[in-house]
Amino acid sequence: MGFTVQILGSGAALPTGQRAPSAQYLQCENRHFLIDCGEGTQMQFRRFNVKLQKIKQIFISHLHGDHFFGLPGLISTMHLLGRTQNLTIYGHPDLEKIISGMLEVGGHKMTFEIQFVALKYDSPTLIFEDKVLEIWSFPLKHRIPTCGFMFREKPKEFQLDGEAVKEAGLLIEHFHRLKKGEDIVLENGNKLNHKDFTFPPKPALSYAYCSDTKYFEDLANVVSNVDLLYHEATFTEAMLERAKTTFHSTAKQAAKMAQKSNAKMLILGHFSSRYEDTRLHLEEAKSIFANSVAAEDGMLFDLRKMF
Image (cartoon, rainbow, N blue to C red):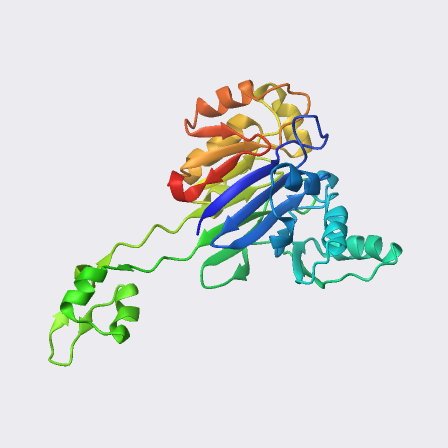
């Protein structure tokens, strides 16, 4: 079981031969998520051998086309492949009207149900939770309502030391408490320290996706101490004024956010098509936050191995 993030699209509004628009595939403990779905995302699934039918939840940050134009085609392909499993899509309240209207004019009844969940844009909100993972949306500052997403594992259980447990003759009913880090009191009154029968739990990992946004310092509180931070870096500092007027960020600003939030690693992305490469973006970012990388389509990050 792992925790991985794969970049399916690392470009901004205009697709290029090297970069598709925004899309990322996240897998955590056999839970499969798609974050944004720019034009051609389903082709990126095929290009990088990702099984699109495994996706159960899709998170759309905002309604600019480079973040959701691929969604109708992806849904149609899921239908044509005979999908029966329900799909949940999180996004702006208007997204349901847009997608449902497009599907209706095609005259095809879907082979699966789609549930739309409207995001809130005023404060961080817990939008998904199970025994392993919490997913939060949080407001960003762009030209239209936009959310980022935080994927945060819940604290892990302690791992049993099989030999120690066997040698002490502990019973199955003790295992649950030991895994939770609780000491055991036996019937004879003896107290057993859980540390003598367990190994420390694996660290709970976290990933934050900061889609299109201008730089604002309060965001650091929301993504504080995240392991892996993705932050848009559409421009370099030479185009700072352009970034301000379009409510985007520069690579230097993304690095400042990583530094202020105490992130362990920064991924830069959403690069304008005006740049032939990301050399200048990386130079700017690394001058402030050394552990920065520039996203490339297909790039895979395995958080279990990294942190």
